[in-house]
Image (cartoon, rainbow, N blue to C red; front, top):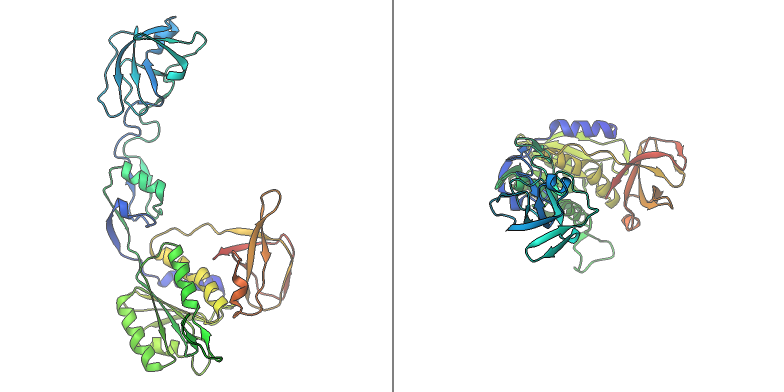
Length: 399
C-alpha cells in the first residue's frame, strides 16, 4: 500500500484536464475561469463623483469664496459639463463625471441652499479632489483583473462584466456518475427485509458534489453481478468523464468492481492506500482520459475518500489551483493505535477568544455513519501507535 500523499500525487499525474467552453457571463457563477481577464478601460474611466452634492473649484474656496451660484445639474450617465466661472458650482449626483474646471465635491449636508445659490460652512476645509474617485485610481487600462483558475463567484462575475466580457472561457463541468454496488442495498422508502440495508452512500456522495457546485451528476445502483457490472460500467464510461463507485473494491468473493473495470479497459493506477478508514480505495483511467474512483462501501470510508481525494482531483481537472491546506489544533488528546494514517471525524468549535479547535468524534467503525451527523469534517493523523496531545496541529478536511 502507498501513503496518502503518494496517492494524491499518482492521481494528479494521471488526471486529464477538462475541456474549455465559452459561456455567457450570466451563466458562469461557480465556474472556474480558463483565461486571464484584463481591464477594458481605466477604472474608474473618468474622475467620478463620489457623493451627492455640488462640484466646484477648490481654489475658489481657498481664496475665500463661500457662496456659489448653481450653474447646472449633472446626473450619472450624462456627458460632462464645465464651469464657466469659478464663482459657480454644478449640482452633481454620485457616479456622475466630474464637471470640467472642478476638482472637489461638497456633500449636500454641508451646504445651505438659497435661491439658486449655495453657501458652504465657514469652518469646512475643501481640499483638491475631496469626494472624487480619481480616474484609474483602482486599475489602469490593460491591468490584470482575474487570473485563469479563479472561481467565478459574485465579485468575480462583477469584475468580468465590468471588463466588457459578454462571454467567458471556463472549464466545462464534468459529467459525473455515482454508482453504488451491492445486493443488500434497498432504496429509501422501499420495503426492506431484516438482512438488507438502506442505500445511503450514493445520496451522500451526490449531495457532497452538488453542494460544491457540480450539477451534472447522475447515479445508478448495480447488483453484485459481473456481467451487469461490465455492461453498465462500460455504458457509463462512454457518457461520463468521471465515475465514482461505492463498494465492491475489497478482497471478498463478491468484490467484483476491480476485475470488471479491468475487463472494460480501465487501467488501474492505484489500489490500496495505507489509511483508516478507506484502505481499499481504487483509482484508474481510460484511454480517453476519463477517471474512475472506486471507493470502499462502508459509509465513513466512502465520504472520507471522496473529500480527501476525489473532490480535490475534480477541482484540479477544472484548472483550479490547489487550495491552501486548512490546519487546526485538537481540543482533546487522541491515541491512534493503527500503523496507518488515521482520519478521525471532528466537530469544529470556537473558544472564548474565537479560536477554532477540533473536537474528536471517533466512530465505532467505518460503518458507523450515524456518528458523522453534526461533525464538520475530519483530521488526518500520522501512523501510530502514537499519542497526540491537546493542541496538536494537523490538517482539517471539511465535509
